[in-house]
Length: 332
Ligand code: NDP
Image (cartoon, rainbow, N blue to C red):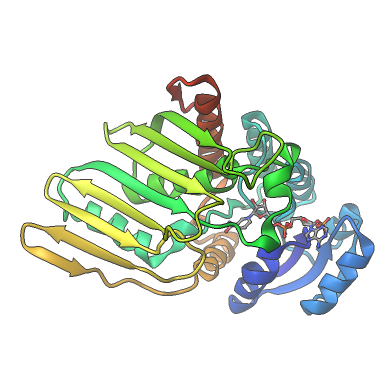
């Protein structure tokens, strides 16, 4: 599998290039808006070709798939162009800044017959898969509530467009809350129906962007959830809990990019830790993507999953702005 990177990003450098290579793939191109940065990034990461020209990269018949990790306002046009060129697309979240754009991207992938995936990494974590399975096995009875602790400290190296640029889709909601939505949907096998939210400007973000948010969610099953996302919490730690009629799942350090953390099942019989697979989250994502291209199964999170998490994020923003409970409308 031969890949081209659209975007000379931190996430590609830190996780995705390695995950492609761990799955036997090669990365042959990187595209940046800046020729010097493209060349430096290519050299630093063992990538042969560097360009600022999307069409040149997409015209290369040797490229099977593209990974789009530019800032969020650029995803739409790049994904549609890639799909039209017949390339499989792995796109970063949020897919786009509006639901209409996200639908157009997924439709372009479908029309071209390519695999289209959203890079929601957390559903690939062994911890979340173990929780999903425990719920399916009835170990906590009927799930009634969930709590997500995803308040972290944004490293200084990433304190750029995320905290200054609304038109690039900055702010904590489109950056982190969309991941909560996807993880909750995956673990609970349920769909969010409505949200209420309050955002905070805690001193890190500017230009009216929120750097923290607390959200309450009602799911289709009647389950209620609360989430706390932040760029500003230096010492909070992360976690994910599901509380059912017969037990609770209590996970710590699992809202992260690495396969770490622990999951405890607490019932009338006491407490026990659940074992889970510790394969890298992005490695699992890329394995599923390659398999989907080979006609085996679907990507870990597909375009529809990306539409659903974006719809959640947009509903959270609308709820915070209006002070009302807002339905999560996906258009699906
Ligand atoms: P980066 O800030 O590292 O990269 C985004 C863009 O910023 C790049 O495409 C690049 O533009 C530009 N850029 C990067 N470094 C520099 C620099 N030194 N000077 C000037 N411009 C620079 O973003 P992230 O990697 O954090 O995020 C990229 C995308 O991935 C976003 O959509 C984000 O939401 C998503 N993401 C997803 C994660 C996940 O786990 N699923 C985790 C982190 C991010 P150019 O390409 O033109 O050079």
